[in-house]
Structures are given as structure tokens and as C-alpha cells.
Length: 263
Image 1 (cartoon, rainbow, N blue to C red):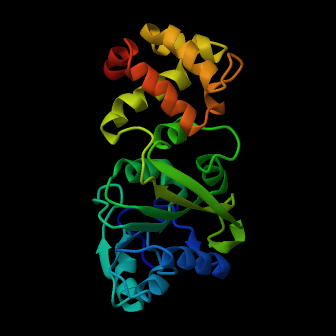
Image 2 (tube, helix red, strand yellow; image 1 turned 45 degrees about the horizontal axis):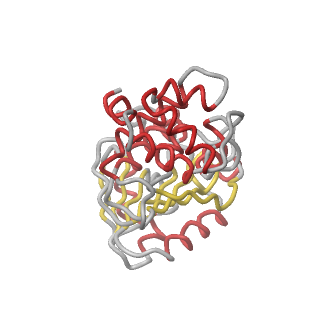
């Protein structure tokens, strides 16, 4: 197939999914959801074709212009768009995709910033899927999004399940929007700044880091830490979504709200 004007397979992150058990698993998960479907990175249509047979409105995005015609032939009932997922509005109830590995972080950030969808079932690098699902230490990105989403890791996808074969395994990650958010969505930006300040702030203990991140709330935060079972020996990566939310509520209700909001 001719080279795309956007680059070759490496530039486009094209590792096409050929692992039939993974395809079947993703379709089963999507079948358990409701509403319109948006597929990111349709590629050769390994997911697009079976998704189109679910008899639900389906839009598939693909950046490689040479694959559009084939996709339209394989999934005639779907709307196939020659589009960049990083520039296209996410407008569906369910988002599905084998995300280009080199664009996983910006695509996830864009996805988590949108408020139009309820479920996302995506294929990412295994370590990314594990971290987002909360297996092992938490990450700043996970902590910043956890008040509004839950993350579930379903299964590992072996590297040989892609063509060409990547250097790492993949993982199926399901993201579900919480019906009852832990933090009001209107506070997403200042909350995210607060979490970022804690994750990147100086200090060798949680209490010291919090004093730097929200200096006007240090006394109240110390009481909250004790109430929710946190000690100075914990670090930001150890906190649960519920503990982050409690710390934020304390900051919001005290003088620390101003610095977190404007920092």
C-alpha cells in the first residue's frame, strides 16, 4: 500500500491488531454497552467490521488516506472519516480503539477531557494499561482523572498479536465515567493543578509535600490525613481516588483553595 502523506507505519504508529481472541474480547465488552460508537484508528478494519455488525451507529476515524476505501468496503454501514483523532471532536457514547502506542498519552488526555462519552474500551501498551488501572503505584495522570472515571484492566495482548510486531505487549483497558463523581467537574482544572503540585512538589514525606502545595491548608490537611488513614510516610503515588478527593475538599474549604486555583 502507498505511503500516507502523514508518514509511514512508524510515524502513524500502525501496529495492526490480528489477535482474534482480543478482537472477540473487545467486541464482547462493547456489546455490553449502549449507544453510539466512535472508533479511533480503524486501520485495516479488524475492529471496524465486527463493530459494524452490532447494528449501532458507528463512526470510525482513520488518518491513513489509503485505507479509507478498504474500510468503507469492509464496514458499509459505518461512517468512515479520514480524520486525526487528536483534532476530531469525540462525540459518541462509547469510544473504542487500538491506540497508536506513540500517541497513547495525548489521546488518553484528550479522551479524559471530553464529557460526551460514558465508556471507553481501548488497547494500549501493557504498562500504560496497568498503571491506569491502578495496578502498582499511581501516576499523576491517573490521580487527576480518577474522581470522574474508573479504570479496569481486562487482559494482556501478546506482541505477536500485532502486525508489524511491536516491542511490547498490549492491554485492554476499560474506562467508565462515574455516575457520582468524587469531585465536581467544574473543579477539574484547579483539582488537577493541586494534584500536579503534590506529585511534582519538593519534600520527602507527604505532609511536607502538602505544606508546599497548599501552604494555607497545612493544619487542616494534617487532620484530614489522620482521618483518612494517611501518614507522613505515604507518598502521592500511594493515595486512592477517595483519599485524593478528601484532601482536595480540605484544600477547597480553606485558604489553600486560592493558591491551588491560581497556581
